[in-house]
Image (cartoon, protein in one colour):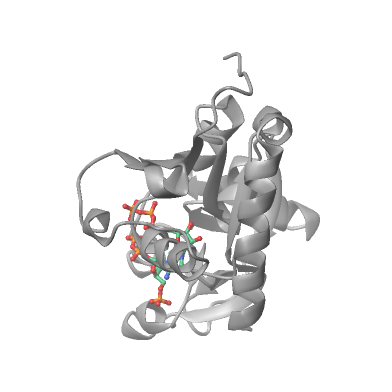
Length: 215
Ligand SMILES: Nc1ncnc2c1ncn2[C@@H]1O[C@H](COP(=O)(O)OP(=O)(O)OP(=O)(O)O)[C@@H](O)[C@H]1O
Ligand SMILES: O=P(O)(O)OC[C@H]1O[C@H](OP(=O)(O)OP(=O)(O)O)[C@H](O)[C@@H]1O
């Protein structure tokens, strides 16, 4: 889709769910006037004229796609999704919100097998991790309740997010290795980054100051 500098409103792909609450809080702390009444709204396109923005409320995994295609100029997305989706976008800043980690998880006392099955929502990240470690595995893609897989004999291990560790504890699972730490990132469409550079840069500066103040 062709873009012109005249599209002055910044279109922001905002992930619904966990990240949104923390992202909108950070935006407000950075001085952007985001109305609170939208926090529990079902509206998918939210005009934020006070901040010269428009929020596109997206499923988190779709944020990099909207930004790559330029229907959103910028977006907020977890590093986990960014690694898995591998889209052609700029990663601008680490927002330091929605902290968790991507880990290999299994039942305690699990014994290595020749060709283990690994269940995950992140098949690309998991395949790359085991390939680089020289381990042959069969990756099984699931879409949720990943911790079920080792409990019911679908997989030997899982690759999934750990935040508080509560899910592992309640299901008698243990964390075996950590792949990487996860926080949410601000990403930008490559063309928008040039055409709307001033607005994007201003936003990065405001957010950057606020993130530094948070420590
Ligand atoms: N405990 C956690 N579990 C999973 N993701 C987390 C956690 N804490 C922070 N995150 C971040 O939040 C993002 C997921 O947010 P959310 O759970 O709202 O989306 P989702 O899993 O796509 O939602 P849904 O459950 O509706 O499919 C992840 O990409 C990750 O960056
Ligand atoms: O360490 P904790 O604080 O327990 O958080 C980790 C859990 O949260 C996420 O699940 P989510 O709630 O998104 O459910 P789903 O994977 O079934 O969608 C993740 O997949 C883990 O199961």
